[in-house]
Length: 238
Picture 1 (spheres, rainbow, N blue to C red):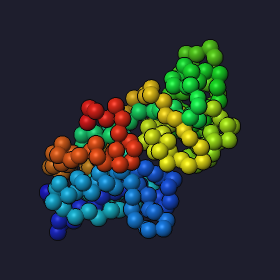
Picture 2 (cartoon, rainbow, N blue to C red):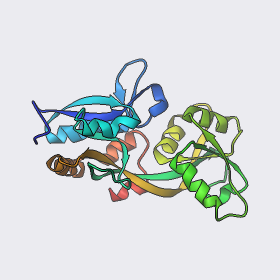
Picture 3 (spheres, rainbow, N blue to C red):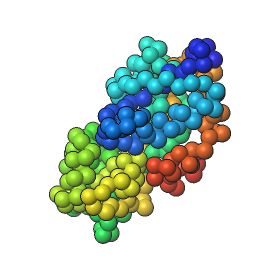
């Protein structure tokens, strides 16, 4: 693979300090280790390729720039394949993304229909906000949206019952249901498909993309996703 020198492959990741970017990729504040399901997936891919990873932390707005300017050889950072980008190609999916409803454990809410007339929290400019806004266009009884910049503030508002539900990406929903200690949470059985995550490459890196697709077929994605509580019915097709 012409992109790789000395068996080292540069992998772009969106990484933050602390748990705000969990469960994707984050630096643990105590151990300083790089954690997250996308870190584990990247490591498993690179191991299958017989290479050594060099992780390149990038903010969300510079992931694609990092590929174009050759700061990294591939990006494993929640890139959605339904958003084609000039000069970028994608691997097969490693995660099927859905939107899920999170409520307090004793709630009987499970669908968007159940949310009519209720106050629901979403992250600002998120897929969840977009889906609810479109849903409201068809409904006579609207879902009242409250937007949040910070995911911790969002779940704190649910904890204090300032909102009645959260509508959010399934990795966040499933992760916080597993790890949120302040109050028991429940994730809806109903899931709303909204895309998939794939590895991104420069359009000239066809050989590397093909090798990564072979690696994805050999890997135990179920084990990695289950470790973070992210395996659900939507993943059965990957």
